[in-house]
Image (cartoon, rainbow, N blue to C red; front, side, top):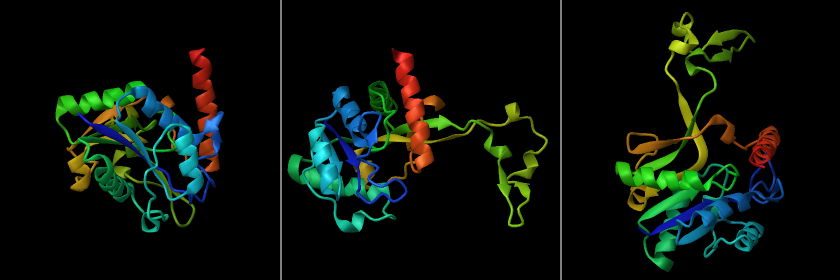
Length: 232
């Protein structure tokens, strides 16, 4: 099947300025996603969707294509990923024809591994689902989560589980924020991702780190270097 990778990478990140091209362990952050996509050999095209000239140049330097500019109305702080991906699909269709499958890779996911990309494609093909994407387990039962009340005190989100042992509670998972394989038409038809239409690619927690704040960035670098050292 004909598949393409789409990497959304806007230029206006606020909490970590220039996050997509900031140096992460020796390479621009976006380079890690591009290199994983290239090394997988799964994609006819690796497309970066960006509104930013510097990001476009860095992406091309590391081997991605930037055949169109993302419009401003899809580049603000409130734009979701799906409209960006669907815009890119339509642009790709005009240039190369409509692909069968699309993989949306996040630009800030240096822990992406080629084996996971291949596993995601295999799972999608075997199950016949519309999407496959990476998840990982919460490190602590979400049923025993706490909140701080308006008067600075503690309360449980689910007090009915106060007496339950943690090992007796159902395991919960969250989106690992790395990549999303999907049938092109499912993207365009706005089929929801977090439903029975999707199948999970389960990752260990030590290979997952959301990177939205400077603290996240520091933790990701420490974790990344530790994993690299383990591979030596």
